[in-house]
Amino acid sequence: MDGAFYGFVVLLFAAVILLIEGLYLWWNSSHGGGAQRIARRLKVMASTSGSNKSERISILKQRRFSHHDGWDRFLHRHRFAHRIDKLLLQAGMKWSVAQFLACCAGTFGAGLALGLYTNFPLALRVAFALVCMMVPRALVRRARRRRLIRIERQLPEAADFIARALRAGHSFTNVLQIVGNELPEPLSGEFRIAREEINYGVPLNEALHNMAARIPLTDLRYLVIAVIIQRDSGGNLAEILGNISQIIRARLKLVGLVRVLSAEGRMSAWILGALPFFVMMVMLLINPTYVALLWTDPVGVQLLWYAAGMILVGVVWLRKVIHIRV
Image (cartoon, rainbow, N blue to C red; front, side, top):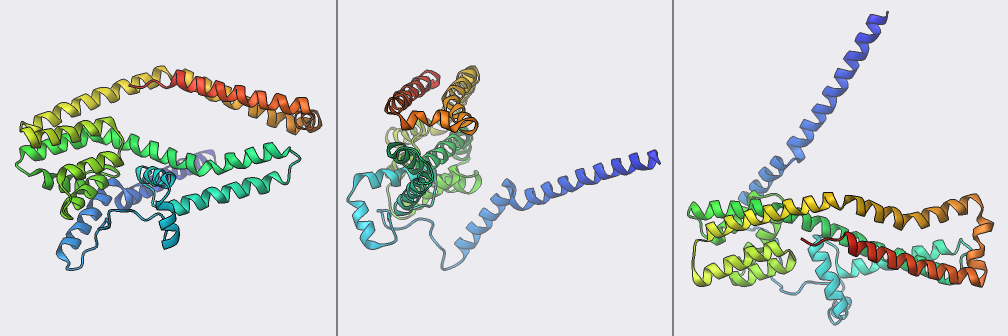
């Protein structure tokens, strides 16, 4: 009886492992990096062979901020809308400026609606609604930061790829197309946009400057400056790009070492920043009448404002301490 039971357990464990492996192989064959590269090549071949191929970028130089013409003209007259559009473009998100502003307004309204169900003072409810309104911006900045990190890690491989293609005899404009088809996202999409801008008639230097504006990375600016200087004064561009890739790899290695050494400080900053709010929530659950004095009594309200200011100063100070720029 025991032997049969143990045998059944072993067979069940093996079946589960095989099922997981089969699901992983199926997902990797249909949604993995190799499958995406093959699909991208087939799409490129289909678009070049067909007569009515679809372009990836618009021939209009000015991006639309809203689908409504009136709102689009209104937003284009304000500088903050251009800053929001630049942030969305760097984050790689397909939102328009109007959609982003509508999302911020929706979260602000949701924060006000939630504040109506509490007995907090009006200033705290408005502050909570303002914090909720900043959530979409925080999400976009987080997507921008993650996208730039991915691009930064792909830059050494892209520089080596361009150097090998140049040594093989390809022109630089053809190399842009090859890189856009072969490398993974999101860097390949930026090279494809630069190639399509050149096809529309944009000069190569301006297309590279536009790519550097979309990707605010110092390492990419080094690559763009090297290409522009080589086109003006000549030189071995393949060798220069090889040296740039080695510099980028060394800097990324140093950044990883700094992150490891500063991990304790970052963890301390997160704990110290979240500890006051966590303690307040616990006290609200345990004894809400005792904590209610902080917003029902005038002295308590002053103490809350002082505490908020001290927390803000402490968070900014800790961020300056643990943020080491390499």
